[in-house]
Image (cartoon, rainbow over all chains, first blue to last red; front, side):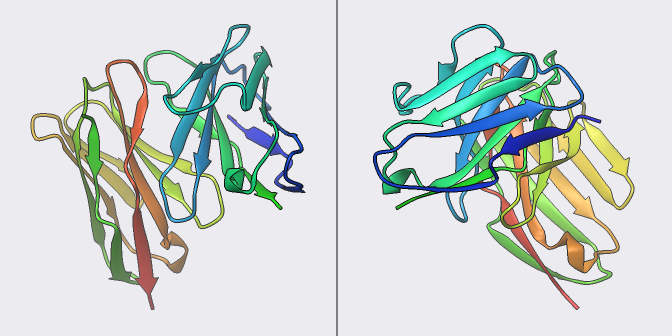
Length: 116
Length: 109
């Protein structure tokens, strides 16, 4: 149980275009979903936390107008990278939590974004 | 500020035992997690400690001392597939996960 999927797994886009990444919890309802980015050989960097039906909470330094997050249902959250630039190229990982005090997170497989 | 420290890289031999340490300074404490991450893949959950002591789960064990702000992950009977990065993460008083930079574990035959 506790499977999280992400789509697409890899995407290459041109500079200036927008890319949408989907994160789905397949066998549970996720009260909270998290979006991370990870640069090579670095740790995870939390970008934002989203709860179903409410606006996402962005970490300091993350542009909310550039990284649009929608958590429309308890099983789906989307991250849209708008007007992508080469420096946005990274590994984007979502995770989902049941909620509660333990808050164990289940990670999706990640999306490798390359902006040319 | 909040800080998680763990060694950058460790090397061990197949079949041996290795201990990966993690020290932390955070605003509050609501548990410590260990995750395994293979190159190019997302992290997978290994363990969760919120009380002092040792939690054993198969070949992996995790220890916590809250008074010392210290944890370790113990891997026994190492296998080549254990070569990965091991991430320590602490949940602070706001239930936010603070991540360490990860320890890259290299297993040699």
